[in-house]
Image (cartoon, rainbow, N blue to C red):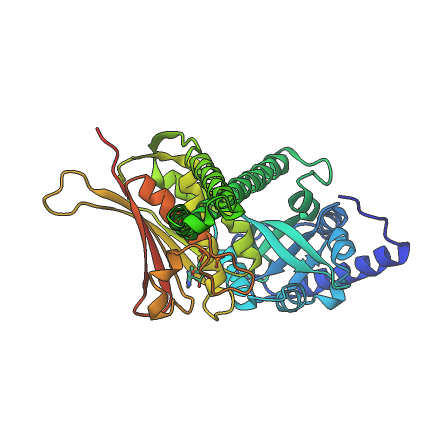
Length: 427
Ligand code: ADP
């Protein structure tokens, strides 16, 4: 991260600001026995170190006062310490949406026992630019006046997440997080790519099915005409017989092309193995998490313990779960409560030896029109302006190919729940 040099005047201003603040803190009586009083010079030196750190750093207290922001914070955001006297001023300026939950998240930091890492927050700079920041925050005990304080350090990951390249050399811990973020992004790209290929395949299969029926009708009518011509002596030798023969050959040829297309689509080779659904769900939620955070959507996980394994193609199942989560996130995007919960369960119907494993994706959106609850699985059914309407149709094809199913229902309290059910693996 490159940090430009500040002017001498900036440093002098900051030094006098810190002196004023320290004087204020020292005048207040200490209410805690945990204070570690420092000689004034030492405390000022530590402040100076934090201020000069070439990373965005903020220290704030539980009553919302911003005690320090580093020079890098100002340089990257454009906000001076004077513009951010309180944490609330920072939230109002830097976060365009979902301010209440960000406020609650920051307040909860004071209760944490260890550092809290949060990824890909969308920050608005003073010039209106959007940046993505990863935060690491940790409580740092009490000030001499008894107030608890938290220090937060940010890493700007905008370039990394937008083009997959590290923006700068990073520290070891930061590097592993950046590698992790890159892997997650790469995995998402891979799943998107496979989803696109599957979409094309399913569209081809859908079109082939649609075209087959009128084609069969053309073939039948042509055959009927050929019979008529053959039975009409006046037409013997007329070019019409030849034309009908031509039509019949073209119909046969088109049929062959469609059959080949359908075989091609069906031939996509699934690689089945024993899958732990909980770990698969966790992995997919991780892929969706950055996007959810950017959109202010809460993703909640409720995973059943001791879930039996299923025998399935991992990538295809990941695609289903990702598709359901993405749909749910789109469904809550314009709702005041933006919550998507993903749960797993094992269902064992009475009298059956083998139960099934269920993944349910439940959202707080507006739900599905009653007449559309089954239609959402039809190819090309979409209520979205840019929707292709192939996602759920593909999900259902994959579920059926695994001897499972996928269903939709409206929740009594609003929103919809989609359930993927898969048979428990043999053995
Ligand atoms: P697309 O997302 O391109 O529209 P899908 O097949 O994934 O295609 O979804 C088909 C339709 O099902 C959507 O357009 C929407 O009307 C409906 N749908 C899917 N998920 C939800 C949901 N969570 N809540 C309400 N409606 C949904």
